[in-house]
Length: 242
Image (cartoon, rainbow, N blue to C red; front, side):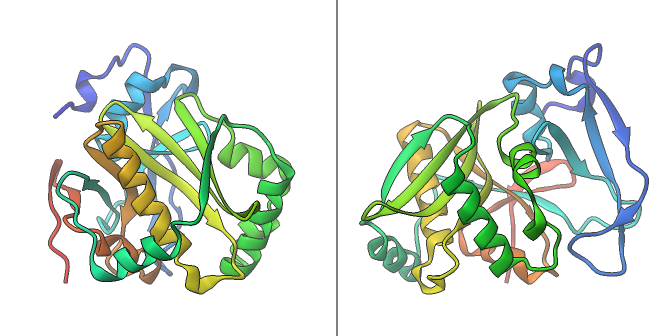
């Protein structure tokens, strides 16, 4: 596996942030290792970084680097080994009527309106429910790598939007938001299954799902996709979850 020393360090430097309140585990402090400068992180470099547990938010590329905590585990699905369970198969059939379009990154009022409704319903009080157009654009529409938007519609009505990165060895599910008025539709599950299918179509071996934290219910859904690989002690390996 590539190490930090193998990357073009003449261009990339790494900075450790000061401690800040953890977004997932209350009463804990978090730190991040940040890659910079942003203009040097192109698709080739990011393909290496994501394989080493980094993620991005807009132009910000980082990975957790906490002093006394290793709860954040980068995870990915080996798509050729994945077999959907019965519940996932039902969700796929329930949403097969959705039509999908791939779009270049760009601001759409309809997307932003859906994003606001999703945040207010699912993450009220978390800060992102107050995002204005500029904050939304910085979070979702700024990228120096190969990124695209996938929008999903039912009878012409927008139901879901997903931001996806393509890296050398797979796809990365950056962020997805959907119609909160239909919680039983299983849009989030359908979206992951759709991205797995797209990986297979593009002959890419992995779908990266970001970080999994065993103690956080918000992230428990990721262990429903099996087998699941985690980056543990510097190596990708099957993740044993109960």
